[in-house]
Length: 176
Image (cartoon, rainbow, N blue to C red; front, side, top):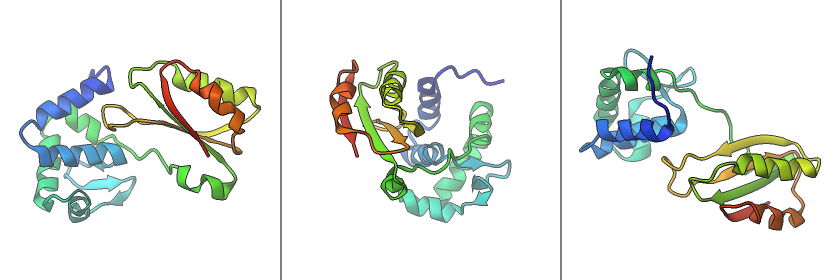
């Protein structure tokens, strides 16, 4: 059993493993961000859909051989093999279609070490009697400017903006 306690430890391990190989690190980062898994043969999948190495290479501007070599290297390491053979995509992010569906969007940027932002933001939304349809909290170890994205059953009233800004460690809030 793999004992990786935090995402920070995970990224530390991935960074150390690919130290001196920035192109392979780009591949590993994309695989994690997109929830792409590697099967035991080194083939990459999004769910059950096979993704050709050439398409991944083109997306991040590396040679397809780098993608294949990264998959092979991952499979040769027990800890990384366990991670990358079990990744799955999290599903669709509704942010960009929320308005078409009549939903609301709240984006919160807070200090990365902040604790309890989801709980406090959810509490404010619940006090308005509004349901949350989706939450995405970006990992600060992956994203340089992480944000918390909340999709609500209907648009949020503008008067909630100052309440969100009163949450400790919150830097910026956008309601749309």
